[in-house]
Image 1: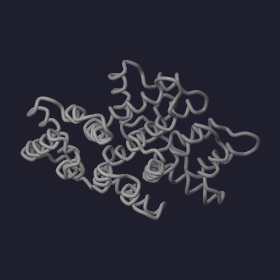
Image 2: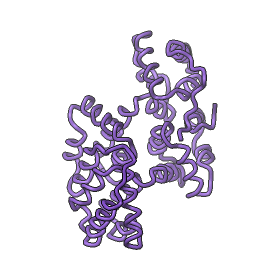
Image 3: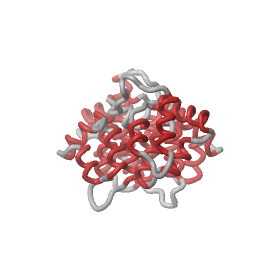
Image 4: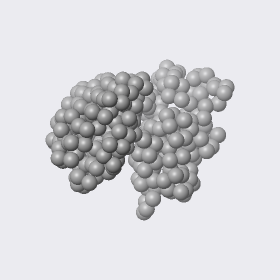
Length: 318
C-alpha cells in the first residue's frame, strides 16, 4: 500500500553518502541528487545513510540538509530523513507548544495515537521522553485542560493488541455503552475513553458497525449531532482515524491544497508520514471523495524541487 519506490539494486550507504556529499560541494546544491537518493530509500535505509554520513564526514546529515536546502523543500526532506518515531515525536511536541491549540494542532496527536501501529506509538513515546526529558502524557496534561486532556492522555498511553481479534458480543455491549454516553452527551465518560483507547482496531471497527446497525446512524454522525465543540470534533477525528485512516489523510491533503495558498506543514505531514504505509489507499480515497487526482492537485499547488520531491514520495517520479 506504500507509494515509496525503492530500486531493486540499492547502492551501499557509502555510495549514497558519497553522492549526497558531492551534491553539497561547490557553488549551489544538486537538489535532484538529493531527491534521487533520499526519495527512493525506506526508513531503515535512510537511517543507515544518516549514520554512515556522520561516520564518513563527521557531520550530521540533518544539519547539512538544513544549511544546503531551503524553504518548503528543505522542510519536507528533513521531515522525511528523520526516523518515523523521531519525526512524530517532534510533530507532537510542536503541536503541544503552539500558543493556540485548536483541532488543527491536536489532530496530529490523534493521527499518531489512532492511525499508527501500537509498536510505532510506543516508539514515539520513548523518543519523546529522550528528546524532551518528559513524557508525552505529561506534556499533554500540562498543556491541555479537561476534557481534551483526559481523552488524549488515554489515547497516547494505550498499547492496543495488534492482531485481528474480534468478539461480536463485546462489540454489541460496548456499542450500547457508547450510545448511552453520546445520548446523554457525556462524551468524556470513562467508558468512552476506555473503549476508544484500549480496544484493538479491528474490535473497534466491529463496534462502530454494530453501533450503526443497532441504532440506525453512524457513531460519528451521532457525535456531530451533540454539538460543534472541540471535544465533538476530536472524537469524530478519533473515529475516522481508527475506522478509515485513508479518509483522514485524504482530507488533510485536500484541505492543504484547496483554496487560497497552500498549507505546506499539513501537506508534508500527510505525504511524508504515509508514503511508506498506505498512500495507495489514500490516493484511491482522494479520487473517490474529491473526483480528482491527488497527484494532479499536488502538482497544481506546488512547484520546483518541492513539487518533485512530493511527487517522488507519491510514486509519480522514478
